[in-house]
Amino acid sequence: MPRIAIVEDDPVCARQLQDYVERYSRESDTELQTTLFPDGLDVVENYRPVWDVILMDIEMPNLDGMSAAQRIRAQDPAVVLIFITNMARFAIKGYEVDAMDFVLKPVKYPQFALKLKKALNIAGRRSHRYLMVRDGEATRRVASDTIFYIEVISHQLHIHTAEKTFVIRGRLQDMEEQLTGLPFVRCSHSYLVNLANVSGVKRDSLLVGGQEIPVSRSKRKEVLQQLSDYLGGGFQ
Image (cartoon, rainbow, N blue to C red; front, side, top):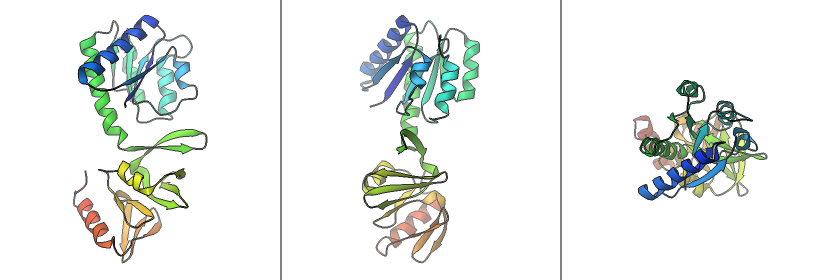
């Protein structure tokens, strides 16, 4: 279920935005979950990248929307930001934090619904290209294209990326399903490899991220075919 955060210090405007989201949910037959935050400081404190869309007021007393968005972007590259403002000149700065768009106050439903639909479509596409993983005490979004390979060791998944290796509990089969539609291939019982990051092929292994990943005999034909398809544009 898509999750939407509404960050607005004016309770009347916050309630209106929530009503608009609920109306859009009914009209589009899309189940949506909303959470209200009365200030930018409230949403950034203990921030976790669990939101699909954030509707952000710009002028707020403790932490303005632009500053809050900058702090959010440092942790979450995927969330879709829409600024709510009564001054269009502020919205131009939204490009600095990769905001999708802005809505001028007073907010009218038809314009709001169009932009919310676009935001949810973008969020849906992005969600398939990021993994949510624990990193110490925090939760992070990891871009799928930064993953070299995933291996299972003692019932734990080791997600090897360009930045670091994340260790989480889980099953490789579930991870494979989560990455459906992306160029990942199961090359053995213990490894799931990102074809986009394969740098070489040996008789019984793939070179990925500076490591030699074994390919089982039963998987060899399938893996080589998928790699050939990917190099020829078989994957999107």
